[in-house]
Image 1 (cartoon, rainbow, N blue to C red):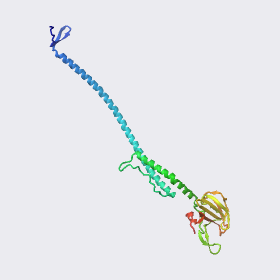
Image 2 (image 1 turned 120 degrees about the horizontal axis):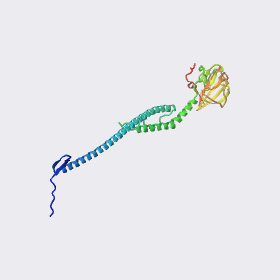
Image 3 (image 1 turned 90 degrees about the vertical axis):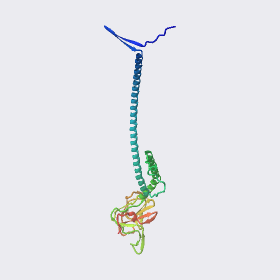
Length: 306
């Protein structure tokens, strides 16, 4: 039977010294094992700490990168919020300007003689709910809706009616045919016959002036009659459109011809005393739809009658 070999229970550590006797220690057999175990623990701990340090540095770098991204996003959000606030202010300013435009449009409608049709008006602000402020999109939606409503009303109703009104006003006789101081010597209506007994109907007003004074058209239009009349002597009649006509009588000389287009203020003749007249003056008549009307409302307040 082979003999069992038992491991030594102690070890001798021998350290040589030149010229001197060596140093020796006897240690238990457990000491090398403990030393080896400590060495392994130290090495493992060192490796773990190094790995942990590397992971910590990597995490720090990731945290720093995320922090930079957060700051960049925060700045973008701040810039976006500032931009949205600026856009909201612009939208609000545009709505305020639209309020003013609607007032101007109302004035134009009155000028054009239009009445409100009862149509639903575009809201001044977008319906955003009670207690909730309108955001930028809602404000711009309100601006767009009101712009479309204003454009539709302006082009569809107001513009054509205003054009007709302005054209009618341009054709309306206005002011005195004489640009010198004068007065109404004889007014419109029934008057005493200046040439005999009884009364007669006078279909205009008589405006005295020096012989040869220029007579001006009181509205633009086309000359429809020139010539001689037993009553008016040399006279000119102008059609201004929209039912308006004017007549200028007792001229000493006529300055236009039939069919000629004249502007407001253009000279059509000169004061005289031709026809049935008692002295130099211009007889001025206004006709609306071929009916003679009192010219005084068309003269204005430049001169008073005597």
